[in-house]
Amino acid sequence: MRVACLFSGGKDSSFAAYKAFKEGHEIRALVTLVPKHAESYMFHYPNLQLTPLQAKLMRFPHVMVDTEGEKEKELVDLRLAISRVEGIEGVVSGALASVYQKKRVDAVCQELGLESIAPLWKRDPETNLREELAEGFEVIFTGIAADGLDESWLGRKLDEDAIRDLKRLHKKYGIHIGGEGGEFESFVLNCPLFDKPIRVKKAHRVMESPNRGFYEIEEVETG
Image (cartoon, rainbow, N blue to C red):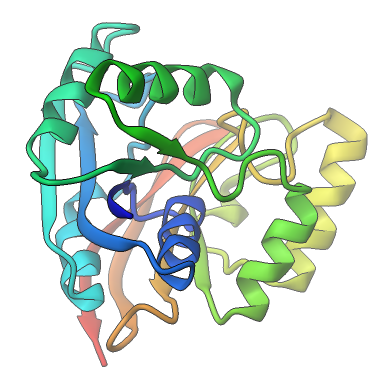
């Protein structure tokens, strides 16, 4: 099937695109919505300026559309962004457990006469994280917004120790291990679709409160 992949540069949208590619779908473009603030109900916020580089490393066309990030109104921008990719039959999303996001992507696809494809939907979040690691995904945490998460998570790599700590925080605070409740955001430095890895040369942490902040990447190199 010819598809567009909703793409934030984070672990799940990248993994969904990878799974779609492995399943034989033809990826016509990666589609990134850029909200003007972090309060978007639908879309990822940190480090979206680097998604064109990620798309280039995957050799896929890339579409970026700005959105005000206002609840429900941002769906108009989603329709616009998807409509910019010609000749597609479906849309791939990285939805894992967020019914709010999945229902709205499904509705937009229905309006446009496209199939909504969610390769990760309802997967066990721990299993999903472990499979991402096993497939060679290199991921760092770039946003936090939950009790139990602090500044030390920003820039931290996703690995077995991080999964263990997320499981502990899930038991203590109820956070979703996959971050589907907005507890954290991520950025993919490397995956099987990349020609070469990304390395962060310069970044800084911005903390809005003890449990809320972002890892802003300022400079990267590849190779």
